[in-house]
Length: 392
Image (cartoon, rainbow, N blue to C red):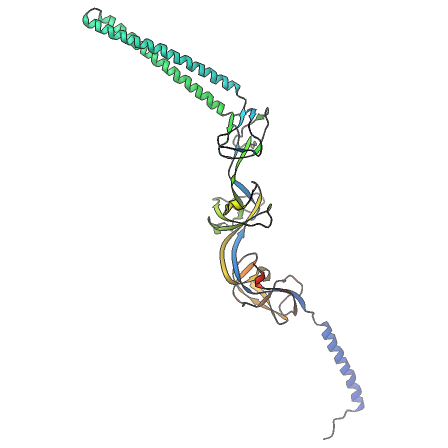
């Protein structure tokens, strides 16, 4: 067979075409998309919780707190405590000037003593008159005195007996007046209704203390709290309220104690919705501490957050929440390419989502979805990777 030969002019034409082809291939190679660096996490098993959190900061509250004011206004004569003091139930905290009431009590006491002496006088005379009436009755039966004489003696005895009873009633009346003055004095005193600590005092000795009538925002004279029992009051969105029940576990975090989490329980769900101006409608819940002795000293008024755990599933297939896109889509690394998958999700929270279908353990999903160029079909290089064991 004769060898294939090209004419000189054809050879001269093929060489430029070959060069152009190589140049075009090189341009395409150089202009191809560069691999995108991504962060991935291996799909593994672990615990997933469904939870909800408060919409605004909650507050540390005391189980018992009372804002005390005297029933009547007056000048402060005695202030027996200062802010921060611990007090016992029944301890006198504050006293207003009441010399006039004390004078009234002294007068009522003197009147009672006078009435008691009149009782002795009147009742002694009544006893004597009764004996005289009895003697006159015996003499009439013997015929020594007339019937009218006997009747006069009996009338005198009845009068003396009535005078004795009136004197006894005067004693009771005087005693009642003493009780009334004591009640009036009680309006000028403040006593601790329970053991606690003085949080705030409004007023000093010599200043005028004003009571707090309903509807008038007058500050109380003494704010008393029982800081031996504390709880958290937190507002929850009204949409989440039907899912919250007393007894559900919660996690409590306090801004003043960063890095610490305290277990607790839902103690009460408010029966009404709170409507705060220009804010969402919320339902207040009360949360108690499971281990109050381990919280350390807390101040009433600290801001706090609560996370109510609605459901918990252990050892389930899960992916980080950062790997989940809209509509339950995830990007899986296969070789050096990204492939889109749609999963069927179960429980979820801010950290993890349970995978019911669509992924297998050991596959790697992308968590850096916010980076430019991260999409299905993109070539990638793994910049960082984490295993499930590195996740809580």
